Image (cartoon, rainbow, N blue to C red; front, side):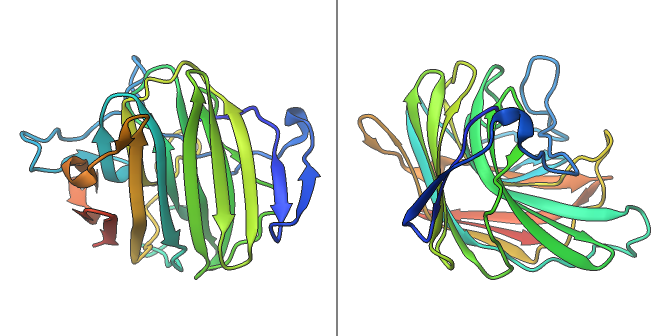
Length: 259
């Protein structure tokens, strides 16, 4: 997922700064990449037999609401501190990304997403914000200060069939980024509140222990009004036949627990 976009940064919600041209913007490293099959849709390890059962993914956990003409999705969450899963000898870096999006998994041509990537490397944790306009990949938001415990709010609104407006706010520092992102042709059929294991050099490192991610103030809407998220499909993450997450959904809250 890459986005090719220009950032507008509001520092302390007062100062607006134009960001560098796309060619000079840093990319996230290690690169995040939602695993998709040849047709552009997300790959699963196991498909749910009914809407009341979870599906299983190698690198995604959370809730996905399928609907028609989705125009807005939003949520808030707190950045959890990370710890290394397992003995820490299998990879140089461990990480997890927290993502709010429209058409993040199944639209073959487009998607608009934003989130926070957390990485622990050599025992040190770091955090960065990113915005994605699929089919391009993620680009880091420069100068967006983050720490464990910060409260983050994300809102994504479809501007038209090929662009979306992303508002990313650190409520703990009063820092806001507003971005109009050109995308491919959006399907507008999916609202996403998910976490993702990062991909590095074509493989998935072990998932970092993120304890829990609690999406609150969860909402999605069409031009006709709000959507009921209680019918969202639950995804749990499964790697090497081991389920790594437990996900539950309430009317305005989605909880993802590392198990």
